[in-house]
Image 1 (cartoon, rainbow, N blue to C red):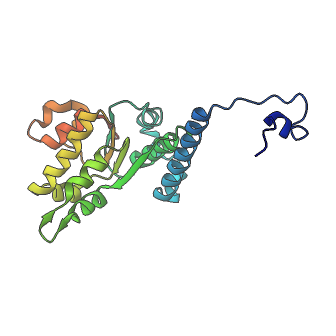
Image 2: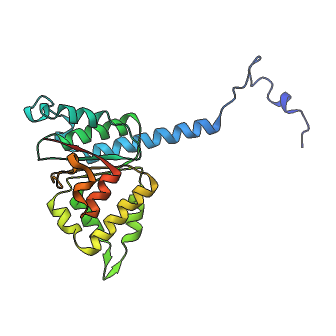
Image 3: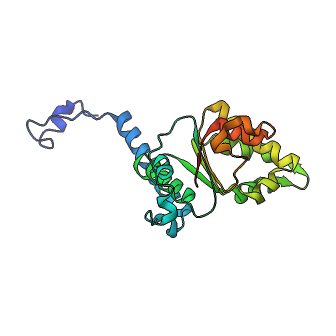
Amino acid sequence: MSTQPIHDLVAGIVPDGFQPVAVDLEAASLAYVAEARKRDAIARYEAAVPMVMRLSDWSHPSMIANAEQIRRVLDHQVTHRGLLLTGRTGRGKTRSMWGLMRRLSHEDGREIRYYHAQDWFATLQSCLNFGRDDARGWVDAVARRPIVFIDDLGQEAIQTARSEWALSWFMRFLDIRVSERLPLYVTTNLDAQGIAERGASSVRGDPMVRRLIEICEPIKFV
């Protein structure tokens, strides 16, 4: 076996004056992971958002009437509280929320999970397998996602949630997000007894709405 020094073996291969460049492998790995997460966030947004929702006519009269509400949504900065947008259909709630989600995914690379309310409760229902309740794993996993957006929490979803079983799991979902200080974003056509105007005092008898107010800042669209 040769005992020739290593610098002699590479002589003629490495140019004279070559200086090795130090590479911060940890920083490079973190940057790669961040970029991968951003690509995944953008892909999820593109897959979830209908094309019609990506091109919004903010000059429409119904949008102009809610210009201040839309601005508050688009300028929202993520904290432990999300947003609860209430009001009638066609006022810009979902469109402005998708605009916010686009910024959070495309610019910030944040991980977001999107659910139509009926899909959320349908998936929950599918966790009942031949009488066995397998909902805990799914609910706990979804509840711990960094950002969750539930669109159109309307009458049908509320009626589904009113079953004791479904409501208990939805309450667990909300409780986990409260305890983990994770934001939730919700749009609904329900006025919920004026929750966006009067706060929790007006809905003392509704634990679900009270919890939503605790985790979300209500914004009423007119």
